[in-house]
Length: 298
Ligand SMILES: [Mn+2]
Image (cartoon, rainbow, N blue to C red; front, side):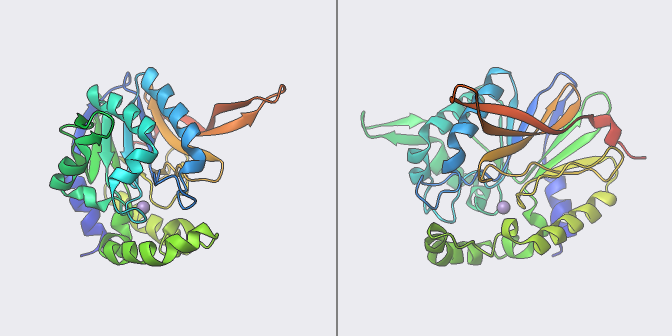
């Protein structure tokens, strides 16, 4: 089975959401939310991420997470991650209650492919104070891919994690998960990087991008947004439309992609220092806003 076949299949089975120029979407991926230990790469950015998410909630955005939201290679259960970042899940719960939460699985949370697993672990949690089960994400469904379809122009935005073009992380994810658990997690604490991750391997990143670009070239008129490689990507208007929202585990910032007023923008949220010495979380546009229709090809 080739990466082209896996991409085709993800596209065919994708959930379709229709949208128009009044719709607002925020895409983040590769949060790798962990247990808040030294091995938790997300822990550095949790305040930035929480603040950004609150902004998007207040402003009426729909949240789409393009895979590897939860770090389930290093951590055996969602339970541990939930306890470490409960405030974040409570905010995501608000999006879910208003039908503004769309989650896609990646290689680090590929267990969410199984609807029974999602129901068992994510629909509710046990509250130790009151000894009761509290609803968390009742009725939540994870997807491999989502297609946003524009009501007027019919233009499509294809959303997926991107490991469909990475053999060892799609077919061999259980092997890589095992290696990460027993080998790389303890080494990560002392600063040694995990080589199974394309985020640490430039050549592999290029190979993955090349395979997805080839697929897009055979499927014209398709804007595609992925994560997985942790490398933000924003093509020029008229170029092959492969976007990448980056990750939420950069050393001091998180990156994401917004769609608003029919425009697409690559953004970064980071901590800025101010004159009086207080720290402030700010949103910095990196590329765009660019009209989505400028990526329509004939
Ligand atoms: Mn990934």
